[in-house]
Length: 164
Image (cartoon, rainbow, N blue to C red; front, side, top):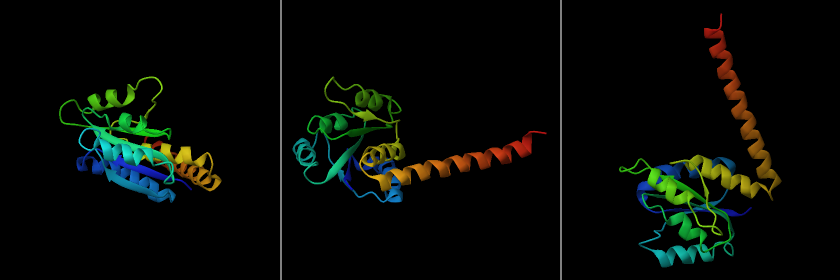
């Protein structure tokens, strides 16, 4: 199975990345985590990204706040799928990062999840990898079935309590 590369622009993004890591762990997907900045470490960011495919990566997750140029800088240097996580900041509640991440120019796509959407970024990465991995695909199907059962159990409890 291919690995997932996870890059955060700052260690302040770690709580969001932890959600990605937890989800990937639950699915048995190998990953590496790095702090690279589109602005402060552009050479290192490009070096990691340009060699990612040859190093066994199948997807890259990039999380950044504020200007949030990281996902775009990563996508500019690879044809691997890049998933951007816009991170909430103290100024504009993450809207600045969301717009920066989602508004990529034609030809350099970045799949973008919700603000602070670390778990969904990992799930999207897993779905991409599952296109060529039947075992992983089955894990995702089972996860969805378990989520469905959980919601229906909660519904039954609420119906019993409130529907007379």
